[in-house]
Length: 158
Image 1 (cartoon, rainbow, N blue to C red):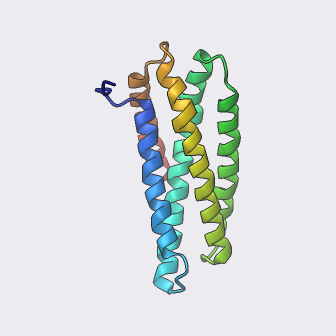
Image 2 (tube, rainbow, N blue to C red):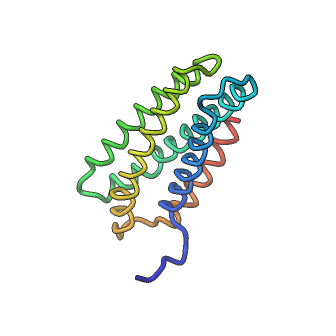
């Protein structure tokens, strides 16, 4: 199979997935430690994870999913993805509203990571596959649109 020459919208979204997965791994390595400095690191890492996921979900919901809805016959998987986003947003709000990291904080971050793992697998295996097969989608142009909106949101939320 020939390799795709240019990165597309799916590659951009998947790069986000990989970056957040790495942050979840870092967080997991900190779990169990009761050191004050570790608590601060966990809090900062959790905030970064929540920020990244919030921006990622927003660009998918504003740009990627609507474009797919226009060209795909079967959009059930997009509805499921949006429900998964809402579950993640609910957990993100809980995490952001908590004080110092404790076992409940750790549990919520861990469950969020599990939600995201499940969501990423479905996107990679189903949604991205269908997006790349849809001839009416310009995933290269969409990549640029997603990147621009992501940059805008990252700046606004910083």
